[in-house]
Length: 428
Image (cartoon, rainbow, N blue to C red; front, side, top):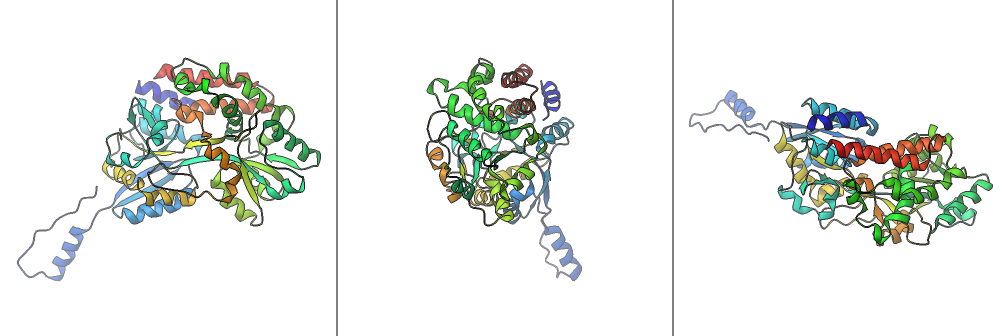
């Protein structure tokens, strides 16, 4: 089974020892002092952490670890998300994997393949609220510890909105009207770095959350999906077709396929577009590019008036390679990470809430327009709870790129995701 999963994962993508010295009753000389000092020096244990989030958003956290764990050296290795699963799986299969792994929706796949250490009985697990482990649990066993939650919505330029008599939309019709009003006035409604499959995937799921997941009769859908009892194509189709009007009416177009995340950010930050989809991690960069920009964020709207939904949930987590030669040191990193102080260090460079008990976060005035969504608990990312979620959602997102290019339909995109999910379930 491990071999089959290893092939699948590749194809789809993705303590210190103190030397004691016996006391001597003879008078020590200078040389013996030097030898004694050398023998009592603590040898650092190096642990390698492979991550798909850049080091810049972990800066404060890594500095905290360095201070709190002087006997452990954390070697940070960044691998871009589009290559991460392939590189990681190759290393794990050859027993050369990192000690610590930043993981997300693929956690259950890696656990099923036998690559991850079972953390269920570790003492630091009790520091977290239970919901933090939902995405990282397989057969009642916990295989990763959450770093912090994340969320994503629509940033908007308040000055452009005010100048054109616009307010954040509360319905999808209002969302579409905003696009029309701005486009008719020669203003680009929204920027999108669609060279990545993520933005359309998340924006379309905003509609699915509003029109499907918000309904009580669909509670437990993701559990049924994991069991192969239901399909996306049979349940998400209407909501996805409603969202695709943004493509049909030209508000999202194929030119965006040639724009990446940084280009879209720059376009919005410099006032060349009125809206841009991202999360709080982008706020500092936006301000650096344009300190005078007054901006806010609103949630994804649905057909009916309501609080809307944010895309998000448990963010990435840290897992331990079961074959690591430095398991005790890696566990010590996780033990320290499960403290309020470490969580605050994480949040300092990547705003979000924490799953560690007793940690409170003030998100800031930029996110005030999303307050109703947060208060309603309308923050969710379905794929975070799917078996093999990342490969499935990548398949879906890449198919949406083809929808934007005009070579696929939204129903075909859903069928692609269903097929990827089936392949994963059949291999487990």
